[in-house]
Structure formats: structure tokens, C-alpha cells
Length: 84
Image 1: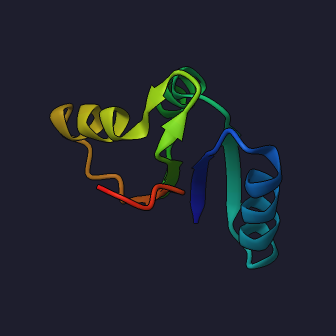
Image 2 (image 1 turned 135 degrees about the horizontal axis):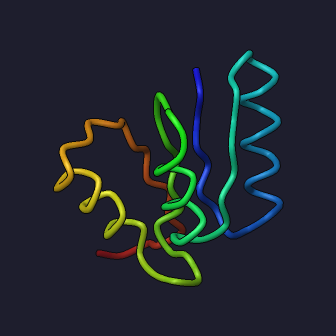
Image 3 (image 1 turned 180 degrees about the vertical axis):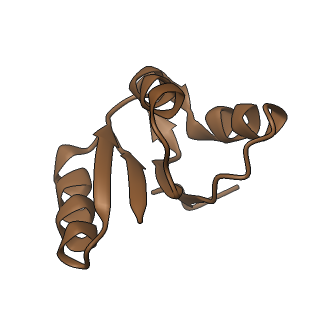
């Protein structure tokens, strides 16, 4: 499975990357919405893991844009938020 990890905290991204690759998955990494957009435009992913809060915005906006464009890419949102 080809997975896009979008996370600005390098240690969290490295842990996810290592865990998923050790289980046979291929991973790519982006640390911002802009970088994720470029990777999504040029690659083919089976799913994505998004950190909700990124330096250049809320990953929910990226997920909404993907859906508006007709993408059915499965997305798992991670967040450190503890309230709505």
C-alpha cells in the first residue's frame, strides 16, 4: 500500500513512517499542505494520514478539496486537539 503521511512534527512523522514501512507499506512524507498538494498531484496513493493542524493551514481543507475534486482517497486525520 502506498501511503502519504502529512505531518509537521518530524518525530511523529518518522515514527509513523518507520512503523508503516516495517509492515511492508511504501510511504511518502509532506510537512505542509503545499507539499502534500504537490505530492498528491504527482503521485498515486492508496490512503493518507493527515495531521489536522499544519503550519500553512488546516488539513481538513485539503480533505474537503480532495472530495470536491471527486477523490475517494481514504484519509485518517490525526490531531492533538482535545475539544471541538
